[in-house]
Amino acid sequence: MRIRLGVLIIATLLAGCDQSAPVDKGFAGLGNQAAAFTPVVPGRVFSFPADHGSHDGFRIEWWYVTANLKDAQGREFGVQWTLFRSALQATPEQAGWANRTLWLGHAAVTSAAVHHAAERYARGGVGQAGVNLTPFDAWIDDWRFSSQATVADPLADLQLSARDKGFSYQLHLTSNRPLVLQGDQGFSQKSEQGQASYYYSQPFFQASGTLEIDGETHQVSGPAWLDREWSSQPLTANQTGWDWFSLHLDSGEQVMLYRMRQKDGGPYLTGTWIDAQGQAQLLKADDIRLAPQDTTRVAGRKMPVSWSIQIPGKHLDIVISALNPGAWMDLRIPYWEGPVRLSGSHGGQGYLEMTGY
Image 1 (spheres, rainbow, N blue to C red):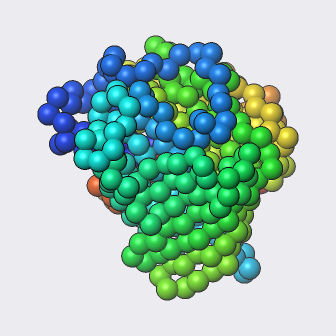
Image 2 (tube, rainbow, N blue to C red; image 1 turned 90 degrees about the vertical axis):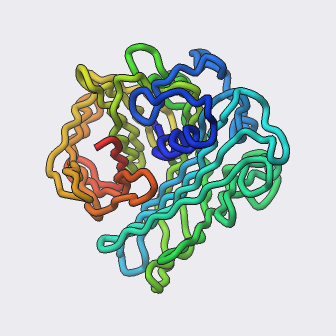
């Protein structure tokens, strides 16, 4: 999925920047009606590379990358980079300060002992943040996710970089696998009432480069995952948060799962099984058995940092556990996000995000 946490922060910004902003409903205000914005409906035909860029008329969207990395000594690290776009009005973007778009960036690094996170904010139209297509370039200040040349597939060869107090990274990402349309051909439903987003991923990136954490530099490499998602009203007022998983299996297969927790009734659960060639299969709630296991106290909250996951139809029976249980994103609106290890029927690694706790 990726109902990204930046949307929560942007909802707060909207309330402060636009006097006509509606009162929040549901988690992060994402249950608010958005009648003026473009709805998400089944049957969209995706177009690449155009859909790598911004989508006027939709209220929210994001470009999100995670990477599970190791250095030459086998030490494990996680990297996260996200750019969020939020429109105050359902109109095309304008140049200058008349622009009604807000941008937000998140970056983080995690080791078994350390977790650093940072955020950046920008107003659209003044060059501080944005997304270009030729060549592809997504940026906020000096944080960048960009292609070095104008090529047919701008996501085939990219550079990813960010820096802040205590950390920096410069990674080279490559992939020769196809993009994956999540949900029903890219229509990713989030509730029984029909709330949804358009959602695709590139889960087959291979990353390599340099990571610096607390003054120590590491040459690292490992798998990386890109999520692209946009919507106008992705949640209901009844939904209080989510648990999202992206998993790289040692078999070469990939798994995406999300569980939307609700005030009333059981969670909305779905996902995608991606084979080693990139063919995707929608997973419904009946296909998945997902349950929290061990918990730990983080920032005064009880967080489920270990989960059991079973997909009987794929002979998957694993437990995932956090590399660093204290991977708390202590930002303006805090949440938990960090790398995880896999054990059981399949080995591997991945990422977990938990919101609303």
